[in-house]
Image (cartoon, rainbow, N blue to C red):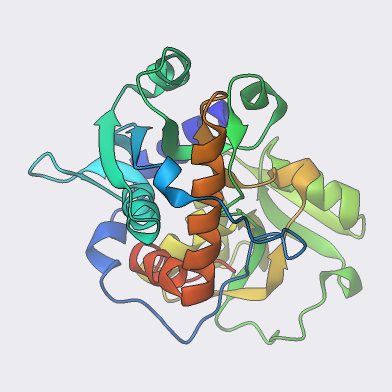
Amino acid sequence: MHMFRRSFVDALKTALFATAVALFCTPLHAQTIPNHNDPSAHKDALDLSLVPSIRFLTSSDFPPFNFKDPTGELIGFNIDLAEAICSEIDADCTMQSWPWAQLKKALADGQGDAIAAGVSIDANNAQLMNFSQSYLQLPGRFVAHQNSDVGASFDPHSLSGPVGVRRDSAHHSFLKAHFPNLTPISYDSDLDVLVGVAQGALEYAFVDGMRASFWLIQNDCCMFIGGPYFDAQFFGEGLAIGVAMDKQNTLRAINIALRRLAENGKRDELFFKWFPLSFY
């Protein structure tokens, strides 16, 4: 998560998300998002009175997931999601903001029950916490200019030639592993890659779908082509709520809430509030 988070925040500094917060109130509801819940998982019959409250820990420096608005109030997708979880299971919800580097220790020290801050499902984090079901996955996407003659039938396996990609990124490695017919052209950042497409220096780009979605809102020159690519080996298993090891009932309750939110459509409402152009 550290590398993802650092590069993500660096991208913010390049103004990739300069207008994201201003646009979150105009969702594009015609789009759909995939259901990340495990369809084979049984419906947990936990007595929810066993979890009367959840103390969430978060950070305040990770827009649009968790950050402070100009008045100092914590807002963001993760904040709304945590509040929706508590509402769904009728639990009292508190939210404490910690520096990102101290979150895991705070959880281990009993300062909170769970972390709502975009925790990645990986082996290092698994030594310190349990994971809820994944609530958000981060696919790779191809991007082309609006003037391109490709459409929904775009098939990168049938192409050859250059594709822009961020240097030494997971997307770079994914291209080399799955599309040997394409030639990666390396740039220093996803933003540089996307600008290359906008200016006509590149016909295609392969980038992080979430970052690209906000850039596409600001730049109507370009568009997603083809579908999303999910691959746990390259892009991870997604983001989850991190739960303290000794809070098994809390973990079960959070998973119940996440399943309900997916089934009743509230998760989708939150998604489009903060990600107005779906990266799926």
